[in-house]
Amino acid sequence: MSTTVADRPAVAEGARQLLGSSRPISWVNTAYPFAAAYLMAGGGITAGLVLGTVFFLFPYNLLMYGINDVFDYESDLRNPRKGGVEGIVLAARWHRLILVSAVLLALPFVVGLLAAGTVLSGVVLAVVLAAVVGYSAPWIRLKERPLLDSMTSSTHFVGPAVFGLALAGAPPSLPVVASMVAFFFWGMASQAFGAVQDVTADREAGIGSIATALGARGAVRTAIVLYAAAGLVMVLAGWPGALAGLLVVPYLVSIWPYRALPDARCEEANRGWRRFLWLNQVTGFLLTLLLIWVAMRA
Image 1: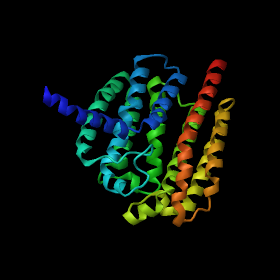
Image 2: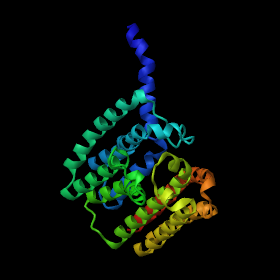
Image 3: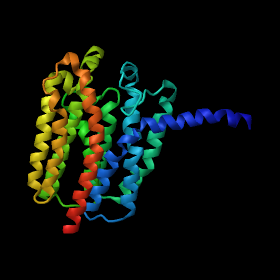
Image 4: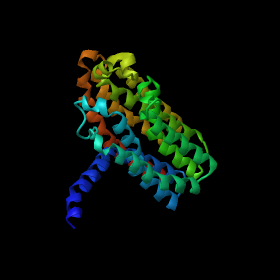
């Protein structure tokens, strides 16, 4: 009995590490795109919806961020941003637990989703999972390859939506394709801006990124172009879906002051990045209202 009691603090700490490594503030950023895309495509309230939403809520994020926390451990120790909503510094003693738990928790969901879907949805899910693993895993490390880092990161969030569409059997109509392309540009822009704050630290550590390649101001300006492109592409979605293009305006306003930011002051972009994290919540709410309106008009 005493052994069990003694183990309780370790179990509780392990659970906290699992939860923290999954980045709870970002759960909605992956579960919501899947569920919204699935429902808007006519998938309905099904086992596939429940299974996919739960998967993209916690197991998917634990897999994505857990792998990142384990293999970015050394650089995270030197990163002053780590330790809050932007990610924990995962102690070495928990690395094995995180990796094993991430795989074991994801596996039954992946099997279930593959069984519930088609060959096409299975291919999409495979691509999404490959992007999750390839972003941080040793030897591949797509996060350190300029441009590919932004594209892969965007796939992490657009992928669940594309999978939701494929699982529901949605045809590739112009509004659907335009929405996914716009979402992809938005994701690339967000990753590019997020990398700006680490330009100096990444260069000192020998880590590559779109921001180290373009410099702070170059990455910010690229993000501005990509956000604007996302808004413009939504025009192709037709009315009233095109209104979603206006949702990029707050992001443009938020990062505009950093358009001339020199590399030496790159850390100042962290203020804009923290604002970005909360902008996502507001944007998600407004997008939900728009989707409800679109559904009511159908």
